[in-house]
Image (cartoon, rainbow, N blue to C red):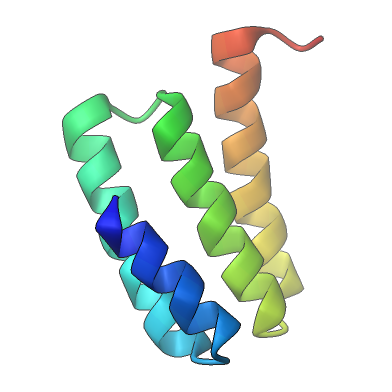
Length: 79
């Protein structure tokens, strides 16, 4: 969504707090529109994870990336 695009630009500009806010809005929309196990929702988790990693929160980033991976594996299989 546009929130995700804005979040990506904000992250590129170094505004990780603003980027995290935009990506969280995108996640909320994806979960509402597509459900919690949709590839777009997984992408939102991955985007949040990337921003968290940029902010130095590697534990939080890993959690988000693992959520994304679990969705992708459930939808597409493990291989």
